[in-house]
Amino acid sequence: MTELRTTPSQTVGPYLHIGLTWDDGPYAVPLGTPGALWIRGRVFDGAGVAIDDALVEIWQADEDGHFAHPDDPRDVRPNFRGFARSDTRDGQFACYTVIPGAVSGADGGRQAPHIDMSVFARGLMHRVVTRVYFPDHADQHSTDPVLATVPAQRRGTLIAERGSDGYVFDVHLQGESETIFFDV
View 1 (cartoon, rainbow, N blue to C red):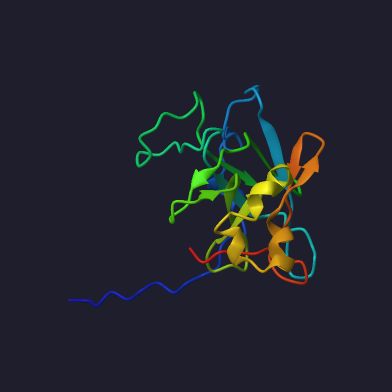
View 2: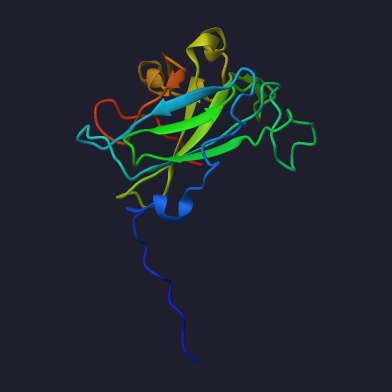
C-alpha cells in the first residue's frame, strides 16, 4: 500500500479572479436596496503598493443584527445575502451592502455595527481577517468587546472613512499603517 503524504502549502493567488468571482459577487444586497451603499478600498502590500490581484470577502448581519445563516433562526431582511466578494483587478475592491445592526457578543454584550472582512492575496499562506467599523457609531466603539482588545493607538486601522457613495476602507497587509488582523 502506498503511503499518502500531505501536499505542501503554497501561497494564495496570484490569479484569484479566475474562478473565484461571479457576476453578483460584490452585492450583499441587490442594487437599489434602500439605505444600501458601497464599501470601497484598496489592498496594499508592505511597500505601500496597491495589490491588483487580491480578493476581499465580507460577511455581516443585516440592519437588525440578524444573520443570513441557518444558525440564526431570526428572519433577515428580504434579499439580504450578508456576503459579498470583490477582486482588486481594477485597483480597488467594491462591495454593495447595508450598514449592519449591532450584534450580541459572546459575553452577552453588544458589539458595535461592523463588517467582517477576509483578504486573500499573493504571498499569504492563509487569508487574513479584519473588521470594518463605522465612524457614525463611534459612541458604541468604547463598549465593543472586540474593539476593546485592540490597542487604542491602532483602532483607527479598523474604522472606515466616509466616501462619496458610502465608505472607504483600505487594508494594509504590512508596514507602518498595518491593519489589525484577528486570529480566527
